Structure formats: C-alpha cells, structure tokens
Image (cartoon, rainbow, N blue to C red; front, side, top):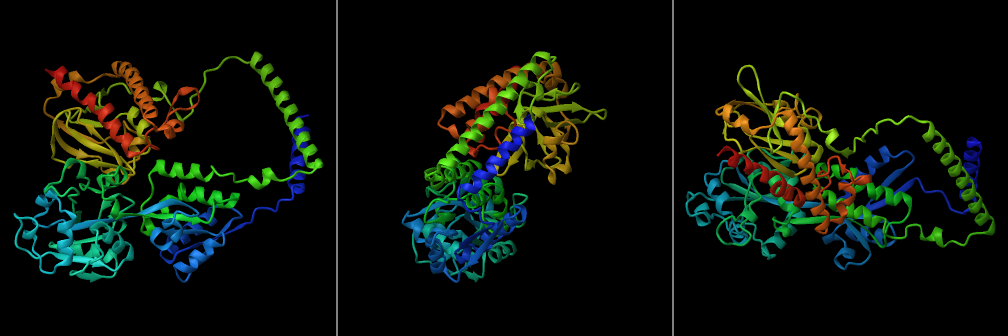
Length: 563
C-alpha cells in the first residue's frame, strides 16, 4: 500500500512539472565582474562548478568597468566595488556585501621607537606628514625617538590609494616616499627596513590561514582621536586577532575598510542564482583570503542570506494561471499525501503502544549537563580550566570540556612562552575562533616549563580531546598545596556545572532580549535546549560580553576564598 502511494505521488509530481509549462533550470549561470574583481569571481565560479553536479558558472571577463556595468544592466549578476559601479553609489538596483578589503599601516618590528609608538599611536595628520614629506625624521612625531629618517613605502594599488584618500581626508597625496608595485612589495620592503612604514592590504601583511602577522612587521597603531596617546578603545593593534576583532566591533577606522559586492538590477531570482549566492555567503567565504580579501562576520553572512529569500522569488509561478486539469492534479496529490500521513500516524500509534520505553539519545547538536565530560582524578577551576599533578611534581593544565562545547571549533590558541612565571588568576592563554577570542586564567601559580607544541598546528585537538591530547601546559607549581584547596574534584565540579548551566542560560537569554533576535536559532534547539557551539555563530560583541559577564566574574572568586 505504501509503495503504491509513493508511486502515485511520484507520477503526479512528474506530471505536474510537465504540465506547469516551466522550462527546466539552466545548468549554466553566467556572471560578470569589474576587472579588479575578476580573480575572486573566477575562484568562486570554478569551485562552485566543481562541487555542484550539473551546474557550470561562467564568468564574463569585461574589458573595463563600463562594460561590466552594461552587462549588469541587462540583468546579469555581477561582482563589483562601490567605486567602480554606479548602482551602489546611487543606491539603485540590488546589491549585498560579500567581502571586504582592509588596509593597514605597518612598521618594522625592529624599529627602535616601536614601544613608544605602541603607547602613543600616530594620528592621521602625523601619518600624512610622514607620507608626503621626504626626509622627515622619527623624532618629529615621536620626541623620544632617534633622529632617523622615516622611509615611507607606497604602492600603486588603486584600492589602497582610494582608502588613503578617504582616511587622510584629502586627495593631495604627494607620495614623497618610495613607490612600489603592490601591497606585497610594500610588506616585503618594510620587513627589511627598521626605519620603514607603509600602508598595504591586510591579506598582504598576514598569514590569513594561521591568523598571524608576517614575520618582521608589526601593526602601526592609529591615534584616532588625536589626543597624543593610544586609548583603550583604540588599542586593537597587538596582533592579528585583536585587529580583526577591532574591525568587526568598530574600533578600527572605517575609511580603511572597503566593501566588495554582488550586484544586479533587481533581486536575484531563480534557484541557480540563489543557491550560488547562498554558497558565496557561506562556504565560499574561505576563498576570499587567498584572493586578497577579508571574509564577513558570521552574523553578517546570515543576514545577507536571509535577505536573499525575502523577495518573492517564485512570484511568477504562484501568480500563474493554472489550468483546471492542473488544479485537479494538485488536489489529487494533496489527497494522496493526506492518506499516506494518516497511514503513517496509525502505524506509529500501534508501534508506540507496543514499544518498550528507551532512553532518548542526545543529538550531537544539543548541549546539556549529560554531554559534558568530567573525568575523575582531575582538579577543576571555576574559570573552566583543569589541573593534574603528575608523578614528577609538574602540574598539567588544560581547558575543560564544558567551555569547548560553548566556543565550538577553536581555530587558534595564543600561548605564553616556556619559562614564563604565572600567578593563579592571571591570564594564561586565549582561545581564538576566526578573530574572536576568550582569555582564560591560570588555575595554579608557577613557571611554565612546557607547552603542547601540537596546538601550534592543530588547535582543534582541544575540541576533540580536551583532557588528553589537548592539554596546554606543564607548570612547575609554586603554591600547589594551598591553591588546590580552591579547585574542585569531579563530584563537586558536576554540582558546580549545574549552576554554570543556569548562568549560561541567563546570559543567553540576555543576548536575545538585547535586540539580537537573529541569534535565537543559534542558541536554542527544539525544546529550549542549548545548541552545541553556541558562540561559534555569534559576533565578537557577544564574545566580549561572555568574557566580561561570564568568565571574568569567576576569576575574582578565588581571591576572596583564599583570604
């Protein structure tokens, strides 16, 4: 009976698709791009065609921006920048951000005045002075610096030039420095010159895969409010991850970031265009780095994908006048489906009455107390690190399973050097996920004698094995017998986790009530259970709040208990 119903439905759907008068979806999607966007557009087209059976995306390479604009005007989807496409500047047509360029000032890591520059920063006026005047010395902008001439390197890259015009607020750039062909050349020159500075693309100044700056250079801090010092809300130049987070939360000059867009005369329609754009805004983002661009924040991607489906994509189909036969066929299909549903409901009811109750297994996408691993024999700290004293007297330290369930996949871990002395409650490591990070604190005091070198190339092992292969440090303790009194054994820690889940749910409820409704699908699964990796799809502003409102308060408790 069931097979008959399925056959009828299949036959009916085939008939309906034939009678509907609709042509099959084309297996070729043609897009265009302005010349400067051809490289990334081609990368997206090639990869999507390779992973999508039956689909081929072709990029039309235009001779100039005008020709690309003509193709878009005829209804073709295109990839453009604001400066090269009038539709964005005039806000006509449809467009959405798909990535961005970030321009950064860089300085040689061995510059004698670097420590002072990191404290004071340089204002846009001071940077313009260095860029436009040959022979200017470092002492003219940093009084304590040596009277060494600044070597300013600049590239002919149009993207960098346009960003600097906006940043300096003037088109009168004399470019008194040393002219180079591109951003990569600027980075290489500054790396070799202790007196050198320059502006380049972030993708040229960093290893985007490993999220670290290139060896030999540092970020040159910008004093945005021109008050002669680098304030706390301006200091995002410590390393690559601090910079990326600063860009996302608005602490970095917006004039040094430019967006790249997908654009058209109207909202994309058709399954092929929508599926391709959805992929570009999700899995396709990883191709931006290799092609000179930075990816979007996860929340930005989700909003853009949501907007793709806001328009009435299938308006023509729904408004189409149906023939009486098609209407009857639709009714028939609906009736058959209803019969199948009733049949399945009856079967399920009979099975339920006869079945023996079994425990419900948790989905790996749900995060609850029963999914957290708490091994016996370890000590646990309230800031979600653990400690274990080995036979040689060294204390092995790591991150607990509870926290890795919250962060999701770790992309990098920032570690302290071997030989560093740490105090209990002091920041000891940072878990990084695509620029967002959490600082964690030492469960014990002592000297770091060894770090887990595996984490340097495989930080994800913390997620896979937080208590074994994913350990972080071996520490020679200085006050073990006193400090371990403030740590939990497994049984007590399980009780503590009950409170932590309550705190976590309260925190996530606050996220939802603060106007971040887009996170609701991330936080809660069906039944109100927490999603595994709940922070992974949230922006840096939520990570910052989690740091200050959830992790940091537990850090202070041990002091009062100790004294």
